[in-house]
Image 1: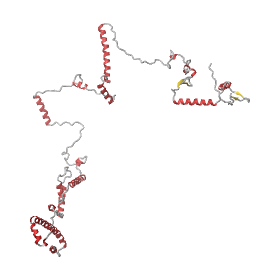
Image 2: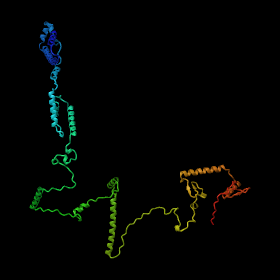
Image 3: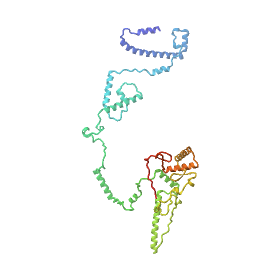
Image 4: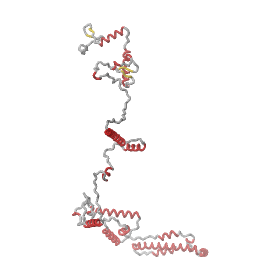
Length: 448
């Protein structure tokens, strides 16, 4: 171990430049690391071979040899060999920084590529690796995501450049003659609308084709002419075609549900008759009636004598209802008779004897009305009035005999407007109340 430290100290040059020494020492350290790793591999391999192939020699060295030659590998197994082999299979790549000359060359290549690139090319370049090689000559391998992002970035850059640059005259809207190059419209296929049918151009080729067709028909004697059509003649083909369909311009009177209902009834019910069938049935009856009249006239003319009309069934519907009601009863003559002497309804009919019958009452006009037929409000009003009347009668003393008769006479005199002259010559009524002199007196009309 002492000898190894001495060798390391002797390898150092103490008088060299430290800047140059750093570069050299970096390379030297890498070389020393490689050499040390190689030595360790050799020592491990030799130890492995000694364990497998020359075990007796080791035992002899342990027994009769020097103890200073004993090493770690003589007693312990070396580390796994596949890990070291994997390290050897993937050596560390030494990347060098690009020099200024390489940077200038890469920028020149990029500028040339940008100049040659067509801004209006619809097909982008498929070889992404070639574009990347022109832009970055010494770049590391990229993943699929990085390549996709790079292609998207290039596409965005291309579209932005096309948007900023000047458009061609075909993409700039309405372009007049001064705005486009000379004879540039001839090379383009232009589509435009026509108002009418274009006039066919009769060229020499068309004329030759027509002449050839005429000569061929003459040689083959094919003189087939188009038959004339007269659409207004009955029995023609055009007439039949026109009668096949009749367009109904009237608004439909039935809804879709009614149409479906008619279709279902027509299929399910054998006795169903729709509106069209009813109309046809009426037409058939009209035809039968006309034919019966014509046949009757023909029979009359053929027999030379009068023939009666054929009998026809006639049905009259009579409703079974009352022909007269009590309110409509009027004497014969109607309005020709004076109705001033006729009796009133209450004079003709009264509810029971003296107007007293259970369930019916007589109104002020004399009409008899059933209590059950009266509205609820009228019933309540009538009941309230009867209660007030009973209460008023109960508050007054009940008079009997001569007193009641006298009270009745006084009330009759009061109703007749009888006045009594007092002691001082003032007017009073029968109850002793003073009567005003300016009271209005209605005229009395007597009918003789």
